[in-house]
Image 1 (cartoon, one colour):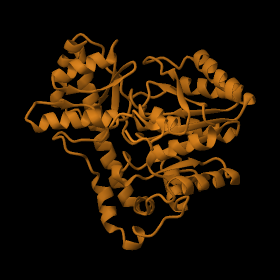
Image 2 (cartoon, helix red, strand yellow):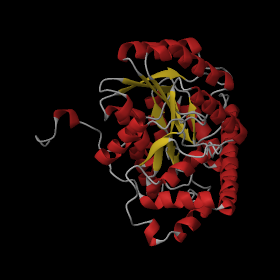
Image 3 (spheres, one colour):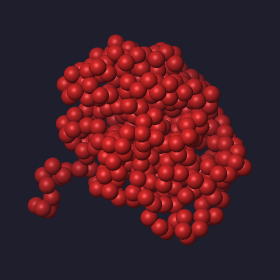
Image 4 (tube, helix red, strand yellow):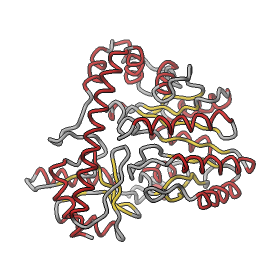
Length: 402
């Protein structure tokens, strides 16, 4: 091991655990094994091929050299930021305060850099996307969590209040990453009562110190009920306008537009125009990655101006949402056939199955050619890559592995 490498930067795993599992599954499939790979975080069709939205690729091919090659502004093209915000809050005329980032991950990273000191905690729902830990740790922070409620129940307001209060009293500030609606990895969304409980708790706690509520919005286009998603977004907007809590959003084109490799996203605070916040975000962009890619920003701006393309894209999102819904229903039916609980799914790419010892169950599943991602309290299953025809075999292997 190189002595030049800081001691604190040694002994990391060679690859991201999720990508490592995916690679192992692909290698075994390449050798001719029958493999069910439910680790993938990208949308696949029923032949196992990555879905690339036709509308998006048509717009990509139309981009001119000047829409691709030049640097974008350090904080991102304002028209891009406005278009990203208006996808979810069309009533807003501008993006407020914000910056373009390398995907949603870049937005989360900048939030830690600007709203927490080293050693402090970010609060989120559990279970949560594993890289949350990595993103926080890279800035000297860590993740604390409160449990997502059981299906049909609201968030435990007392537990949330106690957790948030404890962090506020300890560090004098609070940053919350709220992956809602269409939560990764459970596929569920908070109920109206659950959102109301969170907001009321934050109203009561804001006198203890500054609170930032960052909505991590990655999967909203893929939902069984778009009206439920829009209702949630409007609830958050009304809360943001109160001004007691700084409300922002981490946005991305990765899943929305199937442009995973374009690495384009945004950190936005649509309900404030604070100059000091804008300056801080710009400084972070310059100091960490400078400019985000120009081409995906140009594409989003083109899309915002093309009503016909928006309609075609909405049709594609509807089609794949129906596919995901069918996969979720098939999985629930197959699990019940094995005398196991079904899975409530409302949106996104994943569901979470219970397991008392997730790592042990995941290892047993691997011996049966089934790959899932073990979490601290369950197994993440990628509906986005799980074919309906593989669901019965998956459910049987899961039951036999418990």
